[in-house]
Amino acid sequence: MVDPVMTTNIPPHLDMPEEIQALYMEALSVIDLSPRASSALLRLALQNLMPLIGANTGKLDKDIAKLVAEGLQEEIQQALDYCRVIGNNAVHPNELNLDDTPEIAHAMFEMINFIVEEKIAKPKRVKALFEKLPTGAKEAIDKRDKKST
Image 1 (cartoon, one colour):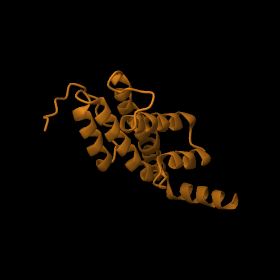
Image 2 (cartoon, one colour):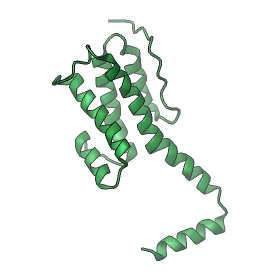
Image 3 (cartoon, rainbow, N blue to C red):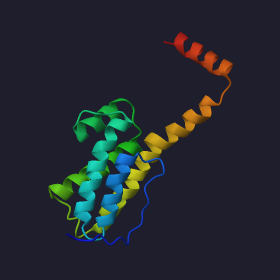
Image 4 (spheres, rainbow, N blue to C red):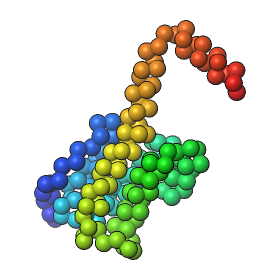
């Protein structure tokens, strides 16, 4: 058993769900000792994040494809695929050796935070602001939207 020594500090997004944050922090605690282990944990965090952002097929590639078909922004798709590919390579090495290039593993933390910002934090902030609109205005918007369907 190894006591993790954390010298890398990339804090999780403030709006990151607790169950994802636990995996994120575990990955952060081992990044300096094993970029591969850290990347594998972040891959698991991403898998667990998918149902929270609208996809739950159980297959990460299919989940991303589902979101893309629904109009997912290209930047978010690229962040998802980056984490998927790097995480997969951590478990099944192909072309990338994460021990030779730990900066690739470090970037996964940024990508996970980016995904949380775009798919959880921003919608949460917009909804909170929208809820502050007067009731009459929200009813008029709802009426308008029901007309258009």
